[in-house]
Image (cartoon, rainbow, N blue to C red):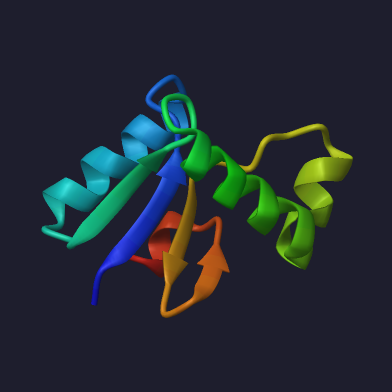
Length: 81
Protein backbone atom coordinates (compact mmCIF):
# COMPACT_ATOMS: atom_id res chain seq x y z
CA UNK A 1 0.00 0.00 0.00
CA UNK A 2 1.35 3.39 -0.95
CA UNK A 3 1.52 6.21 1.59
CA UNK A 4 1.05 9.83 0.55
CA UNK A 5 3.17 12.35 2.42
CA UNK A 6 2.17 16.00 2.27
CA UNK A 7 4.77 18.43 3.56
CA UNK A 8 7.54 20.78 2.50
CA UNK A 9 11.20 20.41 1.67
CA UNK A 10 11.62 23.55 3.79
CA UNK A 11 10.34 21.75 6.91
CA UNK A 12 12.85 19.77 9.02
CA UNK A 13 10.10 17.46 10.29
CA UNK A 14 9.13 16.61 6.72
CA UNK A 15 12.75 15.92 5.76
CA UNK A 16 13.15 13.66 8.80
CA UNK A 17 9.96 11.76 7.94
CA UNK A 18 10.99 11.27 4.31
CA UNK A 19 14.38 9.91 5.41
CA UNK A 20 12.76 7.50 7.88
CA UNK A 21 10.30 6.26 5.27
CA UNK A 22 13.16 5.65 2.81
CA UNK A 23 15.22 3.87 5.49
CA UNK A 24 12.28 1.55 6.15
CA UNK A 25 11.60 0.94 2.44
CA UNK A 26 8.10 2.36 2.67
CA UNK A 27 6.43 2.94 -0.70
CA UNK A 28 5.29 6.58 -0.71
CA UNK A 29 4.51 9.60 -2.86
CA UNK A 30 5.57 13.04 -1.67
CA UNK A 31 3.52 16.18 -2.31
CA UNK A 32 5.49 19.35 -1.63
CA UNK A 33 3.20 22.22 -0.64
CA UNK A 34 6.07 24.68 -1.17
CA UNK A 35 6.39 23.97 -4.87
CA UNK A 36 2.95 22.80 -6.00
CA UNK A 37 -0.29 24.77 -5.82
CA UNK A 38 -2.40 21.62 -6.32
CA UNK A 39 -0.60 19.98 -3.36
CA UNK A 40 -1.09 23.12 -1.26
CA UNK A 41 -4.80 23.25 -2.11
CA UNK A 42 -5.20 19.55 -1.25
CA UNK A 43 -3.40 20.06 2.05
CA UNK A 44 -5.44 23.14 2.99
CA UNK A 45 -8.65 21.23 2.33
CA UNK A 46 -7.48 18.40 4.60
CA UNK A 47 -6.33 20.82 7.30
CA UNK A 48 -9.57 22.78 7.29
CA UNK A 49 -11.91 19.78 7.31
CA UNK A 50 -10.17 17.15 9.45
CA UNK A 51 -10.68 17.31 13.23
CA UNK A 52 -7.15 16.05 13.95
CA UNK A 53 -5.96 19.56 13.08
CA UNK A 54 -7.95 21.37 15.78
CA UNK A 55 -5.14 21.19 18.35
CA UNK A 56 -2.50 22.05 15.74
CA UNK A 57 -4.44 25.12 14.63
CA UNK A 58 -5.12 26.19 18.23
CA UNK A 59 -1.38 26.14 18.90
CA UNK A 60 -0.62 28.10 15.72
CA UNK A 61 1.08 25.13 14.05
CA UNK A 62 1.06 24.16 10.42
CA UNK A 63 0.63 20.41 10.85
CA UNK A 64 3.11 19.01 8.37
CA UNK A 65 4.08 16.49 7.45
CA UNK A 66 0.79 14.69 7.23
CA UNK A 67 0.36 11.17 6.01
CA UNK A 68 -2.51 9.64 4.04
CA UNK A 69 -2.91 5.90 4.38
CA UNK A 70 -6.02 4.09 3.17
CA UNK A 71 -7.79 7.47 2.93
CA UNK A 72 -7.10 8.13 6.63
CA UNK A 73 -5.06 11.14 7.73
CA UNK A 74 -2.47 10.98 10.47
CA UNK A 75 0.20 13.31 11.73
CA UNK A 76 2.08 10.46 13.40
CA UNK A 77 5.02 9.01 11.46
CA UNK A 78 4.88 5.81 13.52
CA UNK A 79 1.39 5.11 12.14
CA UNK A 80 2.85 4.64 8.65
CA UNK A 81 6.15 2.94 9.46
